[in-house]
Length: 450
Image 1: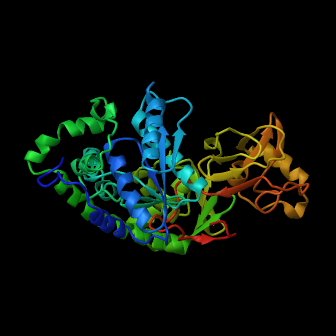
Image 2: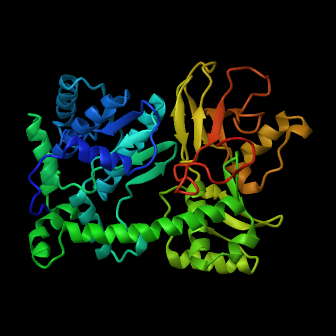
Image 3: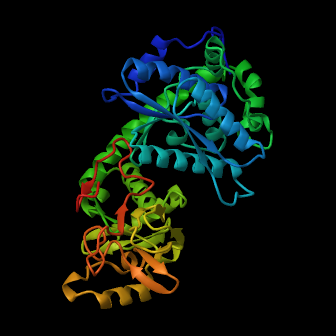
């Protein structure tokens, strides 16, 4: 989608201005970058290499091997060799397990983001740079326009967003694909062409094929980028208002549920209240359960009448004068094997660390009604927490076959077992979809878990 003047490499000065526009960076910033080996991500690595070096920071390149083609492992290794020649530390992250037949690109994208965020968290890196550029943004706007998206969709990809504890940045959104390839050529670096980019089986590839026709009618990448920028400005204002409402109304509970004060929720403009409800549902129910606007509108009306429902993998109802958003027991079905001393994200909500004292892998699953009764029988009465039934039944618990080993969130602060042994099994409510997207911490924290 390049236009006139799009044949020059991106200069270091231009890139520095683009990075400055993204907001604050710490002294000597540590940055991770998603590196596929394509021209876009290689150009980003080249530009970041100089930017980080000038500030005394560090750069880590991360390549995801999706395992979708026989040659993908070799390609990832080749990318690693390129990073080594550039003097940049590099890691390969593998997407293991079965791959879906339907929605493959969406599933691969979700897996890629999950693996990249986890690698950043493990390395203690806040900033994750991705190489989406102006042409990608235009394709995103077209794709969402075709799907009837509103303001959020037309705003395209955000230049900065929070993904859990990771700050995702996209510094190339104002640069064309052609300029990024020119940047690679200027540095004498070759790139890998991804065949899926031209496969008409995928929607984005079909859009690329129609680009010339649309550009001839004035709907080029620059114009679509302007649409995204203006819609993004509106989205940012709505998100800021939503974050303000959540800061006033929301409490995150360490057992994996949220309460909302009804007065500010129901007094807010409908659009802001609906967004707050959507974020609460996503935080507890997970991003795999997106909720349609019509269902959110019905939920808001029900809450105004003091009623509740199940929606988005959650139970929502009034409890003790507040709106309770808890995980729906029938939806918390994930069972995950974790080795001694291992770590896992369970049910899209809990960052779980298993004590190394376990002699073999343990199974993490929802506690359930029977498990709750068994666990409570082991505790002194004063140690039994006062929790709603859906919260009890969807607590993470550790099992060996049919034997209940422990419940990290109930046996004491962050999960000491009844015998008091340490190191403890630990579970922290750290949802994939965080509340208050404009900032990292905007909501009330009842027990210091944020």
